[in-house]
Length: 192
Image (cartoon, rainbow, N blue to C red; front, side, top):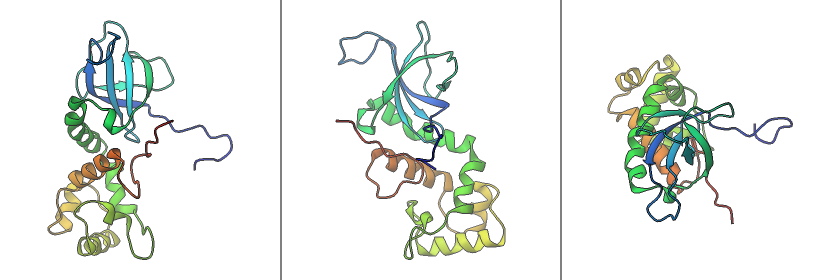
């Protein structure tokens, strides 16, 4: 966990492009290319400078770890949802859904392993569209056998909306920063 001796801060290794401005931001006096990214592990929103002559595509997966990067020259820093361009805000739900679907096993474990937040509320109730009745159905079904996929979950829990969409909506809501509890995103705190 955080704060243990000798442990480094968690960092994203890969991210997806949610906007690429080849001549920089319109309101900036610098003309260097800028990319806005969302991390694949903790959905960290980042702004980066691509290497010269590199043109990035929307939803493209790029390496941003500590080793030699082939497409990203510099990570400028973490940004908030409000700092995203309109293109990035529009692209974000699609890219988050791609990350969820590409990592289905990781995200189905949310339904298999989540526990109570306190004596009155369960973690799964943080997902939009999951109330007490769906919660009881999910817990009963997973007690019989853990879910293997989103299709398995949807098939065994009647009237449940698309589980990947529920996760996507929760992640977007957390990125906007208006949540009391965070399941997927490390909350962004602007430095003063």
